[in-house]
Length: 460
Image 1 (cartoon, one colour):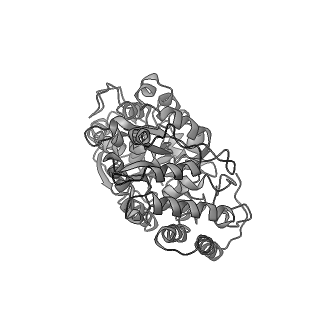
Image 2 (tube, one colour):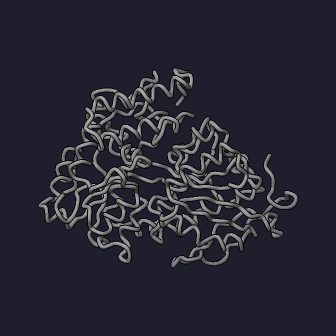
Image 3 (tube, rainbow, N blue to C red):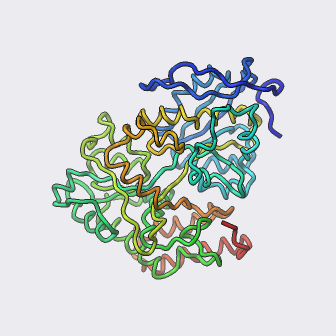
């Protein structure tokens, strides 16, 4: 049952446009929210959880006073490291913890969240004019992006950005090594990484810590594995065989992962998390880094980055094995905990965070590179604010998307541990690659068998 956060539920009217978004140098009006002048949610306190050390989420934190002024709703805006956020949210959802109301995370988790009935369906809110502003325009969110927030045609999150995996590279280091263009294939990437490794800097970085390696490995294995379907991507074929362990693809990827990280990465790469690669790149201790595009503002900030003037961005072309779906497009979403006792108030916050005005302001402030709204992506002021070389990379990514960072099935999260273990062993042991990859596949298969597979394959 959807409950108003405070007082009886009453018809609401859109707020007038007021003010300037806090902490923004761009004069924009905050989103109009469906709201009664009496502020029916006034006095409600919402608990929002998101990631720390991400400019976009740091920026949204500065808007919470503005949101309170508009709605009377107080937001406890909690930011925590990636590992903590990704561990804590599933536990809270499984435990039906009502203290969590709203949270940000990737859409790849939808299968696991629905498996525990952890997230609230949003369509009743979207279609209810009494709680949704007339100018919210849900249809403006790019359908291909929003589709990652849907299961069975039902919306369970609102896509707040698309995300995109790409190569960060240092143009000065390239020039010093006699490299005149970014790599066109994995062999060139490996060659460049080794040529760029010297006493001053390593050639290549990814997050290879066991808790985070899957995210970056997924981006790299797109050049080695075929893409089978939009439900399980590179993980399973439609007969539920483990594509990720299928030869010759598995060994080709495993050999590449092992060689580039043992011959051209910083010492201790097996413990590197996203912040380690970011700092290494910012400080000029690594020449190339493959990761999500969301850290570009940090790289281009001259106050925190020594390489702001010599950084460029690239999306490696798709290879023949996977010609159409080689670019990570990871829609991040805003979700409402199904156990929240303040869902209607939470929906007001979700609207505010995903409105045209908030997205445009964040994009033009340089903290949101891949907004989900078509009107924002087409706004000349937003396009002009994007960093040089990024639009070309983003265009390639969006033309060749793979949104299946995890399979869109309830067991999507459950199969992570054997993959994590395999990725770690490839760079910390000398076990034969084929043996490691086969063991990883056996671990995945055991989890699926225990869950009752094979089952009918989901429609797509």
